[in-house]
Image (cartoon, rainbow, N blue to C red):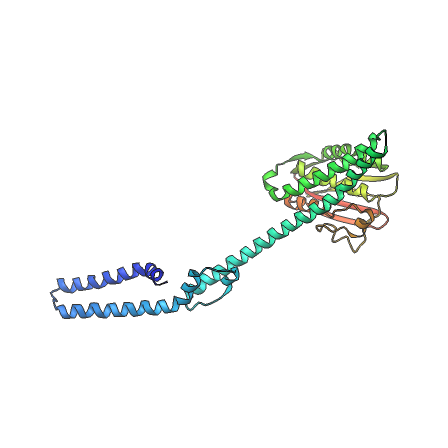
Length: 328
C-alpha cells in the first residue's frame, strides 16, 4: 500500500526536492552562502512535504485498502469511503460503470432467457409434425403424399422461425436496404404458401396497386409478410373465407395490410400480441402458438424503421398493417 502511494506521488516528491534546490541555488548565486540556513530550509521543507504526504496517505488509506484487496463480490464497488473530491469522483465513475454492467447483464440474461423459452416452445411444437409423419409410416401401406407435404411445410416454417430468431441478434450485419416492388413480393409469398391456403380452404385476394415501391430489406420483410399469412390462416377456422392483401398509398406513407376473416383477437389481448411468448386466448385454442410470430415481426419492422399496427374484431377478423415511408 505504501509502495503504491510512493509510486503515485514520486513525481511530486522529485518536484519538491528540485524546487528547494533551485531556490537554494538562487540564493547561492545571489551571494547568500549561509550553510546552516540552507540546511534548516531543506529540513523544514522536507518536514512540511512529509507532513502533507502523510495526511494525504491517511485520507486515501481506505481507498488504497479497497483497491488493493481481492473482491469476492462485485457489489463492493458500491461501498463509499471517499474523503476527498478526487476519490468521490472515482467512486461515482465506478458506480456508473457498475450500472452499465448491470444493464448489459440484464439484457444478456433476457436475451438468453428468450432464446431458451423459444427453443423449448419450438421443440414442443415440432414434435407434432414429426409424430404425424411417424404414424403415417407405421399405420399406412401407402403414404399420403399431400399430408407429408403439409407436415414438411410445418417443419420448414418452424425451422425458418428458429433461424430468424437466431439472426435477430446480428440483424444489422445481415441487412441490405433496397427498393422493392411490394405487390410482386406479396405475390411471391402467397405463391410459396399456396398449399397452406389450399389445405385450409382459404382464398388470397391481392388488392394492391401496381408499382408500389417501398424501401426495406427484402429477406426480412418477406419473412414478416409470411408470418402475417401464417397467422391469418392459422386463426381462420371456417372454410371458404378470404385473406385480403391491400395497400393504401398516402402522401408520406404506404400502408400495407393483411386482413383475414378469422376469429379475431379479444380486446384484452390486442395490446399484448406483439410481446414475446404471449399467446392469449387464441393461442390456447390452436395449441400450436409459440407467441413469437408477431413479436419477431414487430422487432424486425422496428429495426427497419417501419411501424406495425394491429386491429381486430372478435368473430370478424384481424388486420395487421405495416406503415412504410413513401419515398417517391
